[in-house]
Each structure stands twice: as structure tokens, then as C-alpha cells.
Length: 225
Image (cartoon, rainbow, N blue to C red; front, side):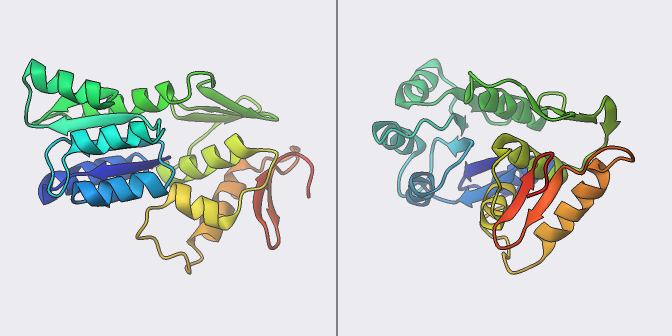
């Protein structure tokens, strides 16, 4: 899952970004409203965490412009202004949720998860491919009923593969959705994580599910390409 964080306070931005990346999200960061608007208009995000008061352009204007352009990505406002009128202004601008600083990181992560669920209301909270079952809420994976432990990054990688199955996913898309904008795409870390995940998914007596398609990317399905 990819999240845009727009926050001009360096300390707050660092704190929130660490919390989000610790949960396995790929995070792009913006320090002012113009940058936030440009990123949100030119990239696909699963959620936006938006500071209400920023240089260049405030969060209210960013949200309004995104909604006018048809961007439906869920938006969570973060602000020091907690009056009812401020909350109403944020919600009317297009926000889906509103948190007042100082805030609990645990609550922030819970609200982001809730936004992500709302962002796909017609989808199940459980993904299934063959005998693989991934619970997106409990963050639990089983294969043939047996639980498999995943790191946060492995979870994010598998989620993309399962959501796309049986179609292949290119390396570029994986980098975009699982890592952030500062990621060095020339490294072989994607292959490393795919190999880690493949070893965890493979089970004696069960067919392999994670395949590499040379020149295309990776695919999760029973039959080898």
C-alpha cells in the first residue's frame, strides 16, 4: 500500500513516516501544499495523510482541488486546530477523517487502516489465491490452513501479488507500490524479497505458486507460466 504524507513540521513528518513504514506502507513525503498536490495528481495512492496548515497551499485547498479533479483517494487530515468549525471545514473540503495534534500514533495507524478499508468497500478484507489466504485486517497469512509469518515488507509484496493474480506484476509496479519514491530501483532488493517470500510459501507436497516471468515480472498462480 502506498501513502502520501504531506506535513511541513519535520519532526512530526519523521515520526509519522517511521510509524507508517514500520507497518509496511510505502510512503512518499511532501513538505508543502504545492508538492503534495503535484504528487497526489501524478501518482496513485491508497491514502493521503494531509496537514491542514502548510506553506504554499494549505491542506484544505489541496483536498478541494483533488476532489474537483475526481481524485477519490481517502484523505486523513492532521492539524493542531481542533475547533468544530475547523473540522467541518476539513470534511467539507473532501477529507474522510480528521485528527487533532498531538495524536496517538497507534490511533493514527488504526484510522489509516480504516480509510484503506473504506477505499475499497466492495472488496473483501481477505484475499485468496488457491490455498493461500491473506487476512488484511488481522495481517495473517495461511497456506492450506497453516499460518506463515511475514515481515511487513513481505506482507505488502504478497498483497500486491494476490490482488493482481493471475496477472503478472512488473518489477516497476512492485517498486512503486511497495517502496517509496526515494527507493533505488537499480538494486536487486525486489528479487531478494521475492525469493524470501517464495521460500516461505513453498511447502512439501504443494505446488509452487510464486513464479518469475523473465522480462515481465512476477506472478502468483498455480500453473507455471
